[in-house]
Length: 441
Ligand SMILES: Cc1cc2nc3c(=O)[nH]c(=O)nc-3n(C[C@H](O)[C@H](O)[C@H](O)COP(=O)(O)OP(=O)(O)OC[C@H]3O[C@@H](n4cnc5c(N)ncnc54)[C@H](O)[C@@H]3O)c2cc1C
Image (cartoon, rainbow, N blue to C red):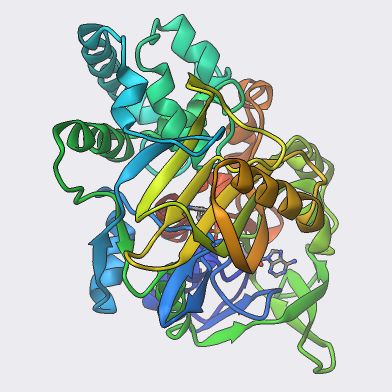
């Protein structure tokens, strides 16, 4: 494509910002990023309390976050280890070591499962490794992860995987498609997970995962600072495609209280979520194949509450025990909590709720559950609702979702990126955007 082409990017999250910067670095002179919210970052957001960033969204980095670490070096940003992990009994708030999950378990069977899982990662690397997904419709990855684990006899490993998957908001093992689970629990993330359990069992200090000392949002703000035409608080009023003449795309948008402007573009990159509701917000008529493609995409209804609280020390707490037995919460009862900074009064609390439940419904449920855990809550700084982990269910994957997704790239001069194209992780979203730019621009 001609370096003078005009390219519009929807969304200034990790995916949109990475795409913009990469286009600029390839010599494109007219790249415009349009962000609906008043600030950049999307799911990488934080609030500042007492001079420290408290992550609302993305927080943890594994050693395989190559693109993220490249950006961190570019901006001279530091990382530090995160707090130690524990389990928490929701009835009474007893803190348990991670090794509780392995009690009574045959360690040899667990070791065998780990080895076999690594073998499966190698086996499926060409389908789920690298940016996006390739050729998965005929594989056994198009079934819920739990069914896949059962089919492959991973009984010993199952409960261990609940922490990186369910506690981090990606749903139950019976809900997340196996393709997404294997993409996410790649060698880097899977080994980090094992390393956490290993270090806790041996009583050492964790070096991984790490957090960004200045916060994930500062990283996004640094990238955004290099984007030459970035518009925040930008309402897209209409996107027309397939227009006759030299520029096939016309976007009418309004930034802040400015009058609407109409501009022509040669290509459009959509990095906002691709669930039907967010797509409708683009005011962009879809062709029938696009409408059918995105119809099954669903996102999880996930919440972050940040409060002052007493009762839990410096640590990350997986609340997957109740009355001494393994049990997963639901309906807005916290599944994960973290006192992210040593000596801080602030606690981050994470929960998922049923579709449609908003902050006003979920906040009292989260607070009541914290009381049950003997956590005394003071000031609530904020609660944030997320449209999280957009993905097509396993049946849609079996029906060729990703083949159709990739076939749609470039049609109507439109390209799709962001976490819906790959997985809901900062690294995956950036990696996909960089690859998309290299492939088509
Ligand atoms: C609680 C939580 C914890 C997480 N923890 C981690 C973690 O530890 N490690 C990790 O790697 N990842 C984590 N993630 C995931 C990570 O934050 C996301 O995967 C990543 O930030 C997604 O980036 P994105 O650009 O693809 O999408 P988004 O961040 O969703 O960006 C899309 C952007 O598009 C904008 N937009 C939407 N509609 C429009 C419109 N009509 N017009 C203009 N703009 C629009 C949105 O406002 C948004 O800014 C976490 C997320 C959450 C919520």
